[in-house]
Image (cartoon, rainbow, N blue to C red; front, side, top):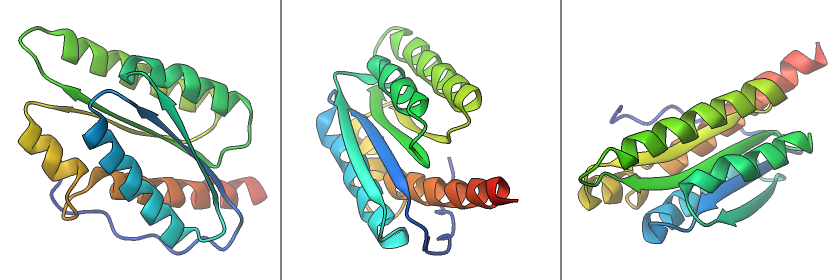
Length: 158
C-alpha cells in the first residue's frame, strides 16, 4: 500500500450520484472511512447526491452494491469495510471473496466500484488508514470515485 495519497482530481461540475455501502462490523474504523469519503466527495463534487447504505458485515457488501449497480443511477459506488486478521484463514478468504464479487459487479454492470474493504493485521494499522488524515483510504476512495466518474462521463459523451 502506498503511503502517498493520489492527487486530487478536478472538481466535478456535473451533477453526480455516489453511493457508499459500509459494513457495521468494526464500526469505528468503517465509520472513519465513510466519514472521510463523504467529506472528500463533498469537496470534489459539491452538487453530488451522496447516499450511505449500511450492511451487517463485509460479506453482505456485494449484494447491496449489485442492487445499486443494477439500478443504473450511480456514477460510482464506494464499498467500505474492515476485516481484521485472526488466527485462521477466514479473513483472507473473506477478503478475496468480497474483492472478486465487487470487481465482477463493476465489470458486469459498467459501474465503477471502489473497493475499500480493507484487511488489517491489527488495530494500529486500521487506525492509521481509517481514522487518521495522512493516508486515509476513505479520502483516497472518494478521489478515485470522482476521477473515474469524470473519465466515464467523458467517454460516454463521445
